[in-house]
Length: 344
Image (cartoon, rainbow, N blue to C red):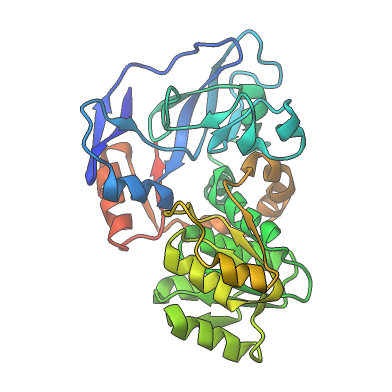
């Protein structure tokens, strides 16, 4: 089968690899129908040191179950499923608490012994707790939005939950990538009265406004902080969704939060220590977030997708086939594409 392998920064190849197969009795084998490239995939695309073995990429997918292990109870061959970016057993103490990304038997696709999903098929460990069977066929008209439930929509929602977004609140979203745009959707859905998007790409800003953003701040750094405070009477916002992961984005997030406010972090941090910890302390800010337990959110978000109440699939602005994936990485890295979907 064909799969995406990254050998180093900027070196993405499509190669013939051994077919995915069941290994454990709790596994499922899924034939991928749609996958995508994540903003977090661009970090290794920029920085990965060369390796002779390569790294299998991809952690967001929808597909059809082709085979199941003997211990799989909730899935059957032919089910159309969404695959969250983390696998989890669904039964441990953390899964029961809704924190599937901390599952004691879990892990992440595209790391270690579990291959990535930018491929024609993938082995899914802990299939019962990981995969979510969709009540639609594999060619459903809303499949692009359903694909976002594997990561970006759930991650944007997680940022909003961590930032304590609620009715009547003023919210700022730092970052106009796919996660940030889904964060706008999530904030609107949770009842935010005012949503400020921090970004500077006109096409993305226009989409954010269609999703519910009420204000746009294109400045960066101290100027962005000053502008947001101007918009909020000098106080700052109740909730900040930090969707980038860089030092500057976190400094901005803390700088625009009002005392007693909350910051939801879902951008993968590129620093070992948290920037702006002292200002956050003295302003009594709640700083929360992390890898989104998207498996816990699918059941809540799915009805709104199927009813057309939210349209997160609009973040996909380019579609490629498997052989074109390296070009998809280049386009996203150079900001020519917002988010690339792979169709099989």
